[in-house]
Amino acid sequence: MPALGAPVLRDYTQNAETRVRLTDLSSDYTGKIGSGFLTTGARWQRNRQSIDNRYLFLNANGVDTHVLDTRRSNLFELDQDVLAAYGTFEMPIDKLWSFKGGLRVEHTDLDLAQVTSAIEAGQTYTSYLPSLFLTYKLDKNSNLRLSYADRISRPSGGELNPFINYANDYYVSSGNPRLHAVKLHSLELGYETRFMGLAPVSLRGYLRRESDVITDRRVFLSETTLLTTKENLGDRRAAGVEFSVMGMVPPNMKISGFSLPNIRFMFSGNWAVTEQDRLDSFGLTGDKRRAPSLQLQGGGQWQISPSDVLTLMAFHQGKLLSGEGYREPFGIMNLAYEHKFSPRLSFNMRANDVLRSTDQKFRVDTSTLRDHTDTIVNQRRLYVGLRYTFGGVTGNDAVRNALQSAGVNVDSQAAKDAMKMMEKAPAAPKPAP
Image 1 (cartoon, rainbow, N blue to C red):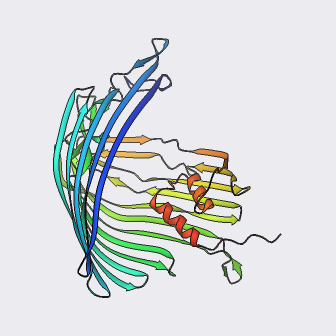
Image 2: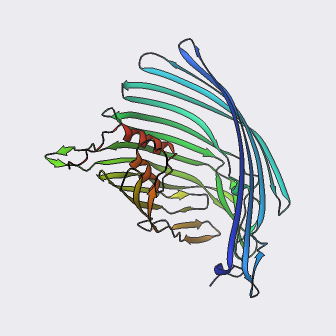
Image 3: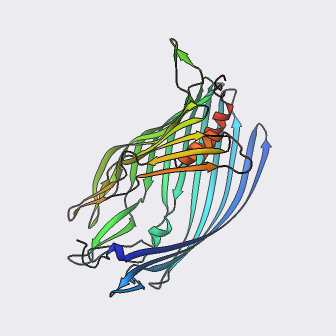
């Protein structure tokens, strides 16, 4: 039974229209100074967003019509200008050691308007972000790198939107226009190599601290109505290890006379112990919340035959802490199969969320509130179809199409690296006629 005031979903719909206009201008200069290289530049970015969220009752008072739900519908506009100037200097110390240092200065000018609620706000701030890298060359394929860097993470438009959204009479939510950027300080020691001179492998240990993190804050508006909003409160510290590996089992490779399958793979992960400041209804408690967490993402591709490819892509997100509680781990695994009838015509089948593991569970545990929220996410899908490619195709067709079929963005850097590596790999021989 829905909570009081909640819409009946079969007679309810959302029509969200988001318009984003980005303007990006940049200029760079690189020149040699002594034995080193100096790179300087400037960049101006303008971001204009308009988010029009409309919720409609489709069957009001027994009449087939569209009636606006004024308790949830709202128009939000965001204008953000970021002007950055930066400089780096890189030079070798000797044959094995090299140094790189830099400074980035960003000036942010932000204006927002919650048109429906007639709320306007603005922010102006300047961030100074230094970085330092010290690299030691172990051999022609391997490096050891020590680095320190400061970064910032700005709040999203949804986190800044102050409109109070009534999901029902018991649960309401809103953003916070006073949120400011979170600053991240990171100290890292990394090892990078190429296994057998080909497969890139990296291992990086780190210590990180985020100051004034953006976290959920829950406040009772009445005895029965709970407001969830956002605030900059407390710090988050983490110590962990990041790793990534990319490689393949070459075609026709055998061990003790046994032929190994032709498999290509790429995986990355992050294992960390995270510590978060605890919050309650009065603010920071002085206590800490601590938990280990493992994040994994990646996949593999099996070239079953010259015409058949099976691809697996998986993602796992570990436990995520907040000031008032945590989100439990979740993940997803997708499978894709492709059979080529010709270089242009192929049969494709994709299964999403094979293990049905995308449900998310949120837990709140403070001195005044204990809340369990379980969100059921219906991601399980099976897609079957034929694909015909028109025009020219660049890169490795099988890798590109298999990654795309598995739901991977083929324009991402990881996908581009995978395709470059596969292009260099020897192709599997075609069977003799």
